[in-house]
Image 1 (tube, rainbow, N blue to C red):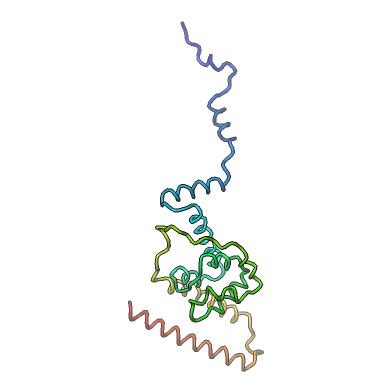
Image 2: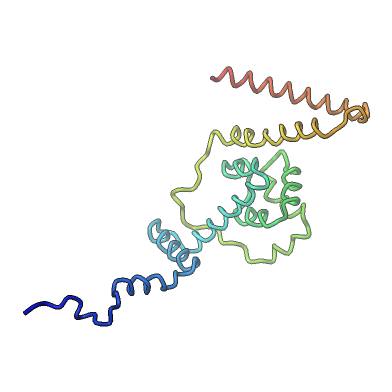
Length: 209
């Protein structure tokens, strides 16, 4: 007896296409759901609590935010040179860019006091103290950033281009013939200081290379 191909699909519908279309129509899980599953997996893998992972997630996001405003400060936080708690790092990242820059400009020479002075410099933000503090992570994260001996040099290398840009912009836009002698003298003094500092740094680098 001759087989009739496709007799089981008399309606002429391509069942494979139907399955593919159905699969495409399935809604993808929201990001929050997949993120939650990732946190659960990491918690089980590294034997740490869900709250700890959430806190370090907030911490890393805060550091990313600060790096866009004060890139020279983040390496100091990661290396431990600037002593600031996880909670205050998050709060600092929630300030405006102008406030963050102002605060970091007034960073004390003794950076051990930085964490304490954070609340004193911006009294309007004291309402943040009424919030329940973030719990200090009880577990340990194996891949937390280690001390980076290149941090200071890398931070300086990232900062210098902004100096160059400022100097070039001033040269191209300012008419020095109408600037007062006093202002020119001050700038000349600072440029000479900068030049001497650069020469000293270059000499130190040559000695080490």
